[in-house]
Amino acid sequence: MSMTHVNELLNQVAQGNPDSIYQISPDWGQGRATFGGLLGGMIYLAMRREMQDERPLYSFMVSFVGPVTTDEPFTIDVTILRKGRSAVQVEAKIWQNNQVACAALACFGTARPSNVLIESIAAPQAPAPDTLPALPYIPNVVPAFTQHIDFRWAFGGLPFTGTQSREMGGWMKLRDLNASDEFTTAHLITLIDAWPPAVLPLIKKPAPASSVTWNIAFMHPMPDLTNDWWLYRAEIDQAAQGYGQTHAHIWNQDGVLIAVSSQTVAVFDGVE
Image (cartoon, rainbow, N blue to C red):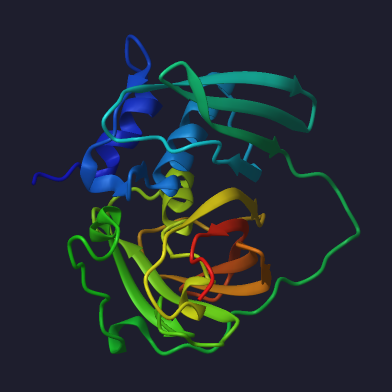
């Protein structure tokens, strides 16, 4: 099966196409749905194109209303809710088969003078990515989109191992890009959602799970983005009755905090 480079999909949105109609190839699938991180990157670019503004992204909130499948085209509609002197609030919706399948809100802002200054959370100690084995891509076992991501596990257990650790994560990098390729906020959004839900290692046998909502807060000033290793560490805040609440921190390879990601996850493991 041929694979689609991440830039081919992101550039369609960034550059625009005559009908603004998009379709994702199956290699970016996650079960019957499209990988949510890629959808997030595409939505961000649609917002940025409509806004025509260079203000940095501060927050990005996504609600996965339903699965965006890879076998049908979809559109992205963007609405500028308010454009103030400092902040711009933007809404976007993915439509597929005449239904809203995904909705997002974002806040873009400019820096303001302030006396409040708190250092960000330091990166945890982790083995160097080159000393850790790459997570293999196993067709029909792991989601199709993971073949585009290089994972190096460093924290917690693997999915479906029955571990009781609250933490999970490690290093990650996009396989599609070389170190010299441009790495943008859209690529970072795509990458942040690549890790499986942090609740899956607690389960002893395979079971489906999916993000219901996903929020990212970006730290500023932000250093230059590069397609290097990124450290991801997620923690479970609480899990019960088929839902889990998790949050994760993302640092660059220099140990600078770049983003904080939180999710509400639905888990369909049943009761033994």
